Amino acid sequence: MSETVERPSFPPLLRGVEIAGGQDVAAKAVAEASLGADPGLVVWRCSPERLEAALLLAPQAPLGQAVSVAFAVALGFGDALGALAPPEVAVHYEWPGVFRVNGARCGAMRVMADTADATAEPDWLVIALDVPFLPEGADPGETPDRTCLGEEGCVDITPERLLESWSRHTLMWINTWMTDGFAPLHEAWRARARGIGEDLPEGGTFVGLDEWGGQLVRSGAETRLRPLTRLLEAG
View 1 (cartoon, rainbow, N blue to C red):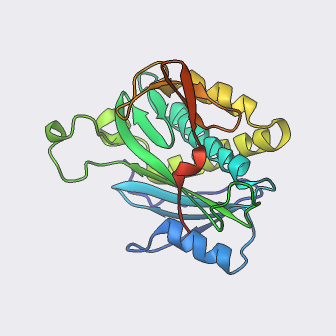
View 2 (cartoon, rainbow, N blue to C red):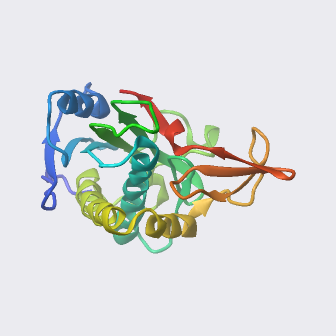
């Protein structure tokens, strides 16, 4: 990797705020939202070890629908890494918010809102991204289902470059979500989905998504819904 410190630039409608080590990017974004910050704020921190970023949004829809914009963040990550990484690097999505690179877990999303009521329109939504670039202490052989970008052929990608690319691709998918709804995101996510048609550890078979990104699980003749709002953490 280059030793030159990069300063990521953000596309129009997004603006970045860098925070120091030791702070939680999602908590900082939630604090800014609570103080009335405008949507489009990206709170971020890049280190040699990882990329951490949180995006503040204000979707004008009930929470049960609004939370589906998290797929824009996931697709933005997949497209950004696909544009920067060697062609043999494969990116997949595991419902509801896990990223997999070459089959192993490599980062995830977190989602927070100012309400837990799926029928209420949230004042704000914070979607955070955390992607490791270097191993997190353990011998890779001890955690075969976890990886980092540095171990998957992405040593020439810096966290700053990925942040910049992710912000641009994510904004494109947010615009698609706003103009065309969730359906295009559903189609793109499903093309890289992991686990559809497979049995789940908690029982049942993952058969697909509903119209707002909830997981459909079939057990015998019964199909039940696990809503995407299970991604939510307390804001």
